[in-house]
Every structure is written in C-alpha cells, then in structure tokens.
Length: 387
Image (cartoon, rainbow, N blue to C red; front, side, top):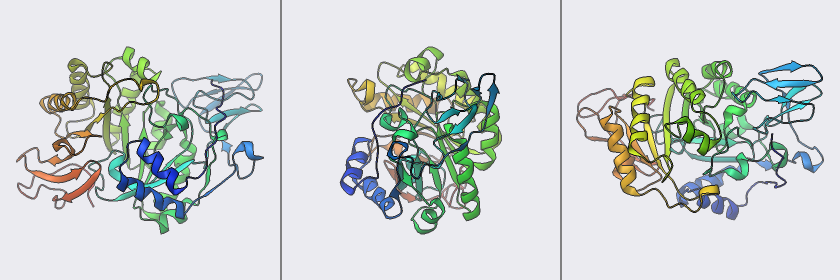
C-alpha cells in the first residue's frame, strides 16, 4: 500500500493542455486536437473538496475475510486490506469490510486524439478516439510519462464530471479508449463504458500493462474491441526492476487476449542500458510470434528521459532500427518504430510485395492505400480492422 499524494488536478486551461501534451511527447497538432475536449467537460470536486460529485461503487473481484478485512482478486498482487486501507493501485479501498472502486467514473484527463497514439496502427487508422484516464496504477514503471496520475489516487485528483455518452455523440471521435494510466485497474468503469460504446456502436479500446488475473480479463475481453498492451522486458528480473511486477502474468494475459480473437497490438519501450540488448529484443520478438502470432503489430517505442530515469539519454535511432530488423527477421510481419518521426518505420508495408500501403508521420496517418482490407498492389490480406 502507498500513502496518497496530496497533489490535486483540475481541468486544463488551453495553455496548460499545450504544456501537458508537450511534456508527454505530443506534437502541436495533437495538442490542438486535445483542446476540443474542453468543450464537453467541467471539473468536479475531489474527495478533498467536501465529497461533492464523488462517484464510487462496490468493486468486483474480491473476497471478504474475518475482522472486516478483504482480499482483492483483480491483479496478481492479491493484497489483503484492513478496514480503511487501499490497494497498491490506489483505485480500490476497503470500507467496512467491502471493497469499493473509488475511481469509478472519475477520469482526471480526457482528450480527443488519433487512435494511432494508443498505439494502434491496424485499427481504424486515420480516425480519432476519445481517451479517458483516471488516477492509479498497479505498476511503478521507472520511466512513466504520466507518473503524476499513475502514482496518485482518484481521491486526490481534481476529476472531470463527464457525460460520456453526450461527449461521444457530439465530439469528433469514432471510438473510446481507456488509457494514460492502467485502466485494467478499473474494470467497473470499463464495463460501464462498454454499455455506452455498444449502444452507440463505438469500438472500445483498452491500453494496459496487462498485469491482471485471468478471470477479470476473461470478463473484460468480450466487451473490448482492441487491446494495446505493453510488454516491457524479456526477463522477470528486468521486469521487476523497471515496473515492480513479475513478467509471467503479463505473458499469460497477452496469450489470453490473442487467443480470444480480439485485435491486439504490442508495444515495447526500448530503454538504454535496461532492455535494449539484442538478445532480449530477439526473445520478445520470437515470443510474440509464437504466442500471439506473426501478424500482431509490434511497436518499438523510443524512450525519452522522464520520471526516475530522467538522466538517461533518449534511445538512439540506430538502436531502434536494429531492433526493428531483429523483429522482422524473427518473422513478425509488422514492426514499427514510434516516438521517432519522420522515420520509415512509421509506415506500413505489404509483407508480400513490400510496397508502402499506409504512410504515417509519427502518429498521424497521411495516406491509407488499403482497399477492403487488402494490399492494393498484390491483393494480400492485411490483418486489422479497417474503416
């Protein structure tokens, strides 16, 4: 368990949104898209503001123990909590012997942005998604871009009073994404949003580190259309060092999602001196090929100095290019370089005729030549969900 941070968040002004997007690596165009969110949302009070506009509901996935204790069964940490204590993720609290989802419907950041930022490159490319994020995470990644939110509690953030259905109807998005922190810690909110998404026929996307138990994931999968999953290192030792959690549950979750038939794309942030060795990169590439499939897109993301690794240099261009070559040589058909633009690794190429079939500048799709899910030049089927 962690003590809650005292820092509070509020709805961003236009200037603050620009500064936030710049700090988290978004370009000017993405920042301007983000400003559209301000038209639909107003700040609500946090729990520290007298308890106004605070939503919560009884959590799923826990068991009651003697003495008003509970055990959370959502993630492999399986923490036992005395009355008043919160889970490691800070999103779930024991109140009088029942576990409550204190982050339920309390996003502290909402944005409209390209779906490619998930990152998803084979799922409705060129469209916008409405991205929501609530405070809390069950990992402690050393390089987290959103650590102010991930390492805080929904009770200590200035949250947005969102009418999600109204925002989806009136906004520019054609899908809904839970992101910024790990939304797998908020299954109650995800299932609530899935009802709205299904009603409006909007795809629902989950961005997650996949550190979750099998049963909750089994319940989430039918209501989620696409998964953007991070696979952060090749060994358990490095996983613990970078994220504070074990590797095996993440691998099990990836296999479970891949086996379900739902669309999945995997991202590995390449961190200098941590997970940038060729042997580890090759291991991940082969594992994805053998356990998720050769058609699963793999995003190799450039590290930029941040949080507890702010003294490291950015990932060298050549390191990313060598990693991409390793992935392609291992048999993966779609390997991308992200957070580095312009670069040829931003684009999609047909694995058969090798011609460019989607042209991107970073996370922006500029031209999509795919016709009815096929390469326009040789008619090879290109796996994905195409508009």
